Amino acid sequence: MTESHSKSRKQAEIAFGNVQSQFLARSRAVEEVDQTVRAREEKTLRLREAREAKELQDRLTAANAHAAKQKNKD
Image 1 (tube, rainbow, N blue to C red):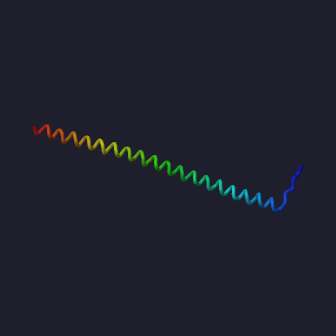
Image 2 (image 1 turned 120 degrees about the horizontal axis):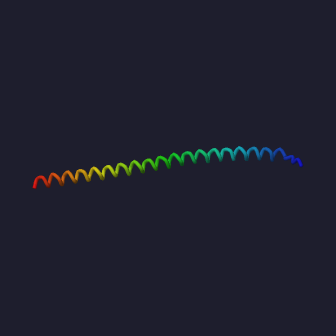
Image 3 (image 1 turned 135 degrees about the vertical axis):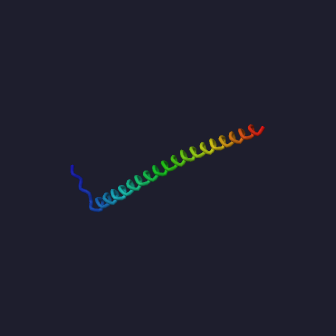
């Protein structure tokens, strides 16, 4: 069974294929951007946590040093 399609249907299918290709390409680009954004957010979170941990450690070290100075004065 060979189906012959009208010229307008063939043109419509070609146009649909082109639109679908553009949509899929756009979807892939959006996925790549989303992955980049997620990776950036994860890295920012890791760096923020590391910075906050270091700041806490620095505060504890400074507080201990201050307490040691106070103890030595007594």
